[in-house]
Image (cartoon, rainbow, N blue to C red):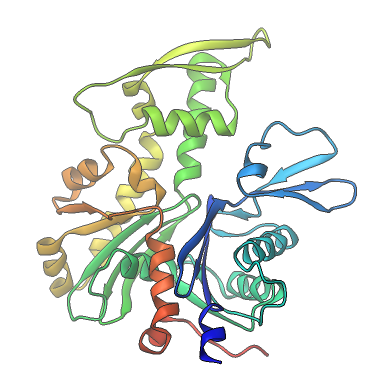
Length: 341
């Protein structure tokens, strides 16, 4: 009997950009973009994840590729529930599986209504119990910070839709700030800048590629150039322009500044004892946004704090939530639980 329970419980990092599913005893088994492609006429799901992401910005009228989450919260409930169900089934090949317990990560600044929607989506997707954990808490556990000790741990988790900054001590969040400026806004900043400077229209995916190849938050030793393709807004024809890393850095200035400001504001709210601990131990960057080159340097430069990159920034939230599933009883207190009515 015990054996059949082990394979069931899961943790889901339901992110704006990517969703990861961690299965008890097995680790992270699924990591796919949070995108659903649906037929506009019948509303049936045609593709989910990687396959659906390839369709963004390339669909005919009969298909719509949507991202069910925006700014870290559910924007399209039906699509989100379908996506969650699909991901859970991907992991559970056995169709007759008993209903799992789910731990789902949510941004810390989320309202009660938004939180309710996440739980509801979990139950609709077939969970027996849904527990919620705040993202910065999961990120800190996943980055192996000693969250249960009486020292200040600071984590900056930059996802696709939200940036979470939190100071954690004794297994709880002492101060936190969740701002809706994150990876997506970096992409948007690039789109806006190319429009203004070169009157070139870029697609979402191209903007993301430019961000990952050229993006930086602090001057780098060698700065590459790259060609960017888009549609000329004057002639309406496709065109290629050459852009430098320095230009893209300028384009990203505003959202990057907002993220650094959030770190500052959180430090400002931190009790002095904990601020002293953070000064010693530094803060940890996690989430996809932590991969932006020079961001650690930039935060170090502006706050004077030591900054460390988490080992695997993209999966730390999922791993932290996964740890809660593995040691359910021990870590129960970090979950925000309530009975389903």
